[in-house]
Amino acid sequence: MNSSINPSASLLEHFENIDDPRTKYLIEHKMLDIIAITICAVICGAESWVEIEEYGYSKQEWLEKFLALPNGIPSRDTIRPRDTIRRLFAQLDPKQLQGCFLSWVKTIAQLTQGEVIAIDGKTLRHSYDKGKNKGAIHMVSAWASQNSLVLGQVKVDEKSNEITAIPQLLKILEIQGCIITIDAMGTQKEIAQEIIQRGGDYILSLKGNQGNIHQDVKQLFNWVRKTNFENIPHEVCSSINKGHGRIEIRRHWLLSSVEHLIDAQLWSGLKRVGLIESERRIKGQLATIERRYYLLSLDGGVQRFAQAVRSHRKIEREGRCFASSLSNHAVENQLHWCLDVAFNEDDSRIHSGYAPENMALIRHIALNLLGQETSVKAGKKAKRKKA
Image (cartoon, rainbow, N blue to C red; front, side, top):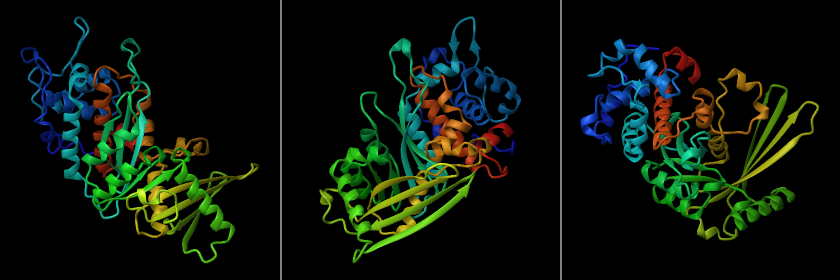
C-alpha cells in the first residue's frame, strides 16, 4: 500500500473542533495525534490499546512526519495506570466524534440516484462490563452498498431497541433519491414516513411481528399464486446460483395491488408488495424453501427489487476460508461480515466508558479508508496485513 499518502491530510481536519475532555494541565499528548495514531494502527491490524501503543512506537519516525508528538508516543504507564489512549476514547463525546465522521464522509461519498443504503443493527458482543453492570452495546449502522462506505452509526439506548435508533440515524443521513432497505425490526409506519419525507424510497422486510400486514401480504401471494396470477398484474424474475455442491434458486415477484391490504393507507408511500422465494438444493439433502415478504415504495421493476435486496444481504466472498463453510452461516450484510472477519470486532474486549462506541466508529473510518485504497487488489483483511 502507498506509504507516501498522508492519512491526516483530509481526515483529521474534520476532527479539529472536537472538545478535548481531559484535564488541561495534565495534557501531555495532542488529542488529534492520539486519534491519528489510533486510526493508522487500526488500519494496520491493531485491535487493543497495547497493540495501538506498540504500533505507535514501531512507526514513530514515520508518524513524526505529519504529527506534532510533542512528548513522543502516548504510552501505557505500568507504574501509574494512566492508559492515555484508552482514557481519551473512554471520555470523548461519541456524538461529537460522530459529527466529525459524518462531516468527513460527506466529502468522500458520492451517492448516486437509486443508491441502496442498508440499515441494520449489530451487537458488540464483548463490550459489556460486568463490574459496572453494563450490558453489551448495540449499534445501528448505514451502509452504502454501491460505494461500499459506512455512512453513519447510532448507538441503541440500553433500555430501548432499533425502532427508536433508526429514525435518529435517518435524520443525520442524506437519503434524497436513495433506496433504504431495513430488516423486519425496522418495519414501522413512522420509519416509512420518515424515509418518504426525506426524499428516499424504502424496501421493508416483513415478518410475523408486523401482525396483520404480514399475514395479509402472505395470504395475498398465496392466493394469486394458486390462481397462477390470472388477470393479476405482476412482475417476476428468477436467478440460479451454483457452487460448493449446492444450487440456490431465487424467485422474485412484485404486485401493485396494495389498496385492499389491511392498513395499507397508514404506510406512507406504499406502492407495491414483494415476495422472494429462496430454494436451496444440496446433494443428498432435502431441498429447503424460504419465503420473505416486503413492502416497497419505489417504482422500479422487479429486477431493481431483486438487486436492492441482494445489496442489503450481500456477502463479501473474498475470504477463502469463509466461502467453504458458507452454507452453515446465516446471511448477513457485507458491513457486518467485514467487521467480524476482517476486524475481529466480535472479539474486542474494549468496554470502558464511551470507548466501545468510539472505537466502533474508528473501525468504520478504517473500513472506509481501506475501501478507498485501490492500489492493492485484495480483501480488507489482506489490506490490513499489507498496511
